[in-house]
Structure formats: C-alpha cells, structure tokens
Amino acid sequence: LKGSINANDISLRGTIDVPTQMLTIQTGNGMQLQFTKKNDDLVIVRLFGSVSTTKAGIKMSGPWVDKEFRPAVVQSIVGHFAGHETSFHIDIDTNGSITWWGPDIGKTPIATRGNGSYFIK
Image 1 (cartoon, rainbow, N blue to C red):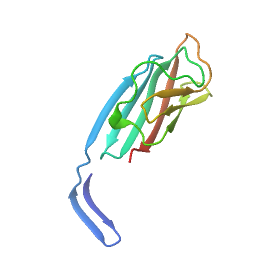
Image 2 (tube, rainbow, N blue to C red; image 1 turned 60 degrees about the horizontal axis):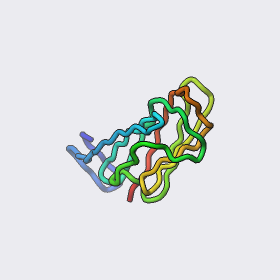
Image 3 (cartoon, rainbow, N blue to C red; image 1 turned 60 degrees about the vertical axis):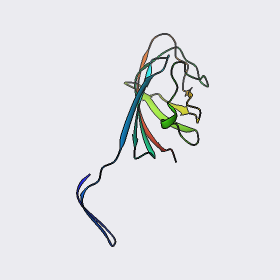
Image 4 (cartoon, rainbow, N blue to C red; image 1 turned 45 degrees about the vertical axis):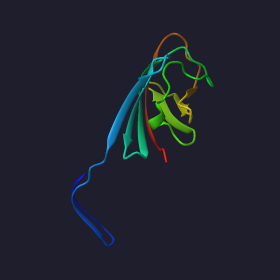
C-alpha cells in the first residue's frame, strides 16, 4: 500500500508492507485451492481447476491445508461450476481437511471457480 491515508485523527504517509505467504494445493479429486495469507491473520482462498469423483459430505483426498493456513474454526467457501447454474461449497476444517458439499460428481471433471476469505486469529 503506497500513498497517504487519513482516518479520523490518524494520518499515514508512505508505504505499508504487508507480509504475504502463498500456498497452492490440488486435491485428489482435481480441484485446486490457492491460499494467500496476509499479515498472519487473513487468508484469501481461490478455487479453480476441475473436480471429479466425489460425493456430498466426503473428505477430499490428497494434501490437506498446511497448518499456517488453517482456520481457527471450520470455514465454508462457496464456489460454482463454470458455465453451469449449480453451486457448491467446501468446508476447511481446523485440522486442514477439506470436505465437499455439493452434488455428487462422476468421472467426468467439471470446472470449478470460487473465492472466499477467513481470519485465522
């Protein structure tokens, strides 16, 4: 962040450096999650890629979310299927597991998109 900021009786001029850390994982079901952690307290999640072979309520296989990106309480991230009118959500648990909450998906992959954010403190 660069420039001048004025709020109430506080004035700041110059640059604010916000530490940023990134992580991308791909579940065994094909969906990818890109995590951007800002200032050790806010995580922004982007969902992309395609998902296949999963059912509602099933923990997705593959890597779980690294400890430094895990929420303090379970977080639900909403997404949609690109080019379709159907939505879904995933739960990111405090242990790093990812649970699928959407329609049952067969072997044919469906493109996913979504964004969300949560605080980790």
